[in-house]
Amino acid sequence: MSERRKNISTSFTVFLNTFLIISTVIIFAVLLFLSLRNMIDTKIDDTMGEAADICTYVSADIGDYIAHSESADDAIDGINRYLSSSVLTSKGQIWIIDGDTDVLFTNRNSDPESFALDDSAVDLVISLRDSDNTFDTSKMRTSSFAICRSISRIEGTSLFCLVELTASLSEVRSEYANTILLPALVSMLVAIVVFIGFTGLMMRPVKEISRAISGASEGDYSARVSDKITNYSDLNSFAVSSELSLMGRTVNNMLDTLENQEKDREVFISSVAHDIRTPLTSINGFITAMIDGTIPKDRQEQYLVKIKNEVDRIRKLIVSMTEASSLSHVDPSMMEKFDVADVICDITENLEPQLKEKKITAVKDLGSGPHMCYGEAQQLCRVIVNIVTNAIKFTPEGGKIKISLEPDNKARKVMIRVEDSGPGVEPEKRNRVFESFYKADPSRKQEGFGLGLYICKQILAGHGQTISLDESPELGGARFNFTFPYPPEDTDDE
Figure 1 (cartoon, rainbow, N blue to C red):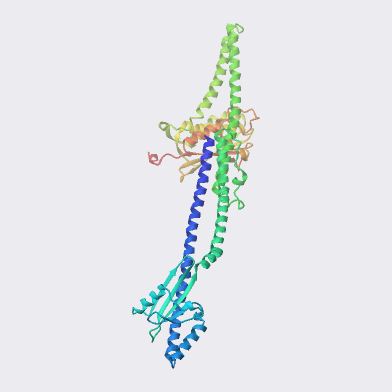
Figure 2: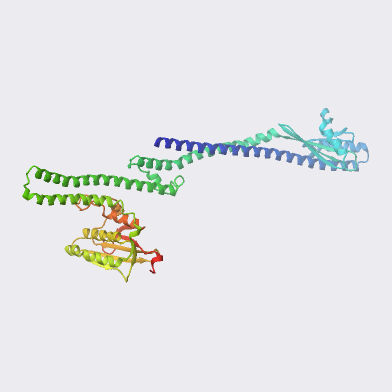
């Protein structure tokens, strides 16, 4: 199933990359086609404009020659000299035509065929002759070139000036290929390579995170997301976003927790097996001895008491294990208001024998009450008992414990702090002490099964509250910080 998900993920990634690349290529090709078309149209329009300008100026100049010539021969000579020497007339082919479409002059007189007009040029002359217009244009385009023509009447005469310029489209395409198409194709290929590479870089952390999670789902908690992904810095920020870096750290923390819990579970199972095996062995031995007569009848009651004590040990262990998994569920019918300051006073009074045994001084800073809270009073009281008992256990003889309250009206909860002058807990272990079956120092022979603080966390979580552990700035030992909720606002006035 995992392999199938990997194949689906890989196929989707390939499909997405292919789709994006093909879409980009299509859009790019359309843009290139439009840019070539625009370049060709611009060339034709520029050529047409130039032909119109030449036609206008030549018509005006020849009209002046005819108007200021003393004879027809002078006019003919002047027109021939002008057409053969003028800079304007050197740029294209020019004809001076009469109303019968006969060519009278041309600037290409060395070519006998230059006097002849094709049918489209004749039609252009006739069209202007038969209209009241003084100017007209036309263009004819093939795959290799475009012919741009401009014709105008020569003022004061019955003659027409026809100018023809040819735009080479092959030259436009060649220029386009060298200046736009080739660089664009190179840029596109580079962009595709960069895109594929960058996509690979972007997918690498996702794949690595997915690999770690897949390993955890299969029971392998040793896999971790590499430091290159979890350590967000300027060097890798271009490929790994801060969100992916945070996700990688979160996955690693989750795997650390799971791996630690798995190890603790194995230790706990071994411990529980030992704790159950020992009383069972004793019970089995006592009962066997009573059956075979090794223990006389007058002493059996004494051994039955021992059997009952061993059974109580097993029952206590089972109760601790089962209730730890159910304390996060709050029974609404058991919710009630209570003064947490009074509860703390009662608890410290009940624990007075344990405090005196170790000569521990308990200081209470409860402020001015009352401090009303709301919840399953018995369970929340149990939290305080567990925390204070834990403080007594780790506070050395002659030490000090401090219990303080701090109401938070804005958040509608009471912050309770229990501090001690014990050795405290190392920073790297402070979050783990609330895990099930965890013992901060497994080598020490501590009573219990490592469930006390876990039970506290579960009870508080069921009430929507939190608990944390840090160092006591005043006493130097551990400081537990946890909250109890205020009563609901609609019950404040009851």
